[in-house]
Structures are given as structure tokens and as C-alpha cells.
Amino acid sequence: KAVVSTQSTGATLGPELQTIAKLDNLVQGVKHSTLPIYGLQFHPEVDLTVNGRMIFRNFCYTICGIPIGTAVVVRPITTRDFMTGAAAVPGKHLTTDCVMEMAKVIGEIAGISRVLYDLTDKPPGTIEWE
Image 1 (cartoon, helix red, strand yellow):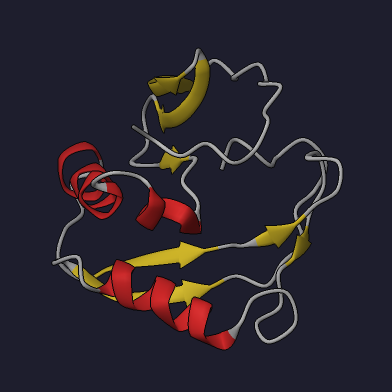
Image 2 (image 1 turned 180 degrees about the vertical axis):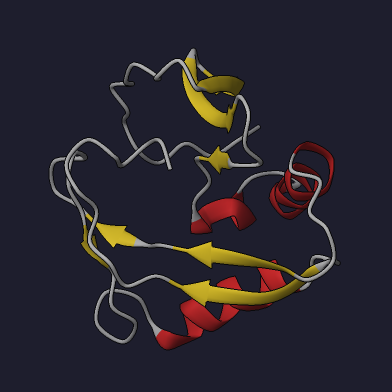
């Protein structure tokens, strides 16, 4: 059973994005039709989801086919309207321990050489589909 902690109203995917995962009829995973780009709606509470870490690792290996030396970028945000978001600043919105744990868990996946933290804000309408 997956832990769902946010309410999503969904959005219309562009023709270049294909749905690869759904939960309760809401899109949770997408892939680009021609580029090696994937998006996954998965939160830090992955540890509360039964086999959450294994699900995330399987997504990285099986779906994305992560090769050795791949970088993963995390982009935590804060939002009030689920349409726009401001960067979640370590030490302010997330504890440093939380950020380090995210990097550790992701970095344990074979093939990932580095974990990057994106501090940019999110423009309107992009919350679900990156």
C-alpha cells in the first residue's frame, strides 16, 4: 500500500508525455515519448510506504534504466496552492538531516554517482509533471 499525502487535481499531459504509473486514477509517473526523461510523483515519506525504497530503486533501474555515473536532482518545494512552489531551503523548510537522508537513500542506488539539490522556484502549473 502506498502512502498518499497530497491531494492532486491532475492535469492534462502534453502529447510528448506518456503515463507510466497511476494511483487512484491520478498520474504518478510519466516518460517522454522520445527523450530519456522520466517523472515520478514520490515524496520523502517513501519510508512510510511498504517497500517504498525498493519501489523507488526499481523505478530507477527498470523503468529509467539508470546507467553508471548518473546524477539525480531533487527539487523539494513549499506550496500553498499546488500550482506554484518556492524552493524548500535546507535548514529553513527541511532539516539538514532530512536533506542528507534523501541524498543517502538515493545515493545508495547503484549507478548513481551524485545527488544534486535544486534551489529554484517552480513556475505555475509545473508541480506534478517534471
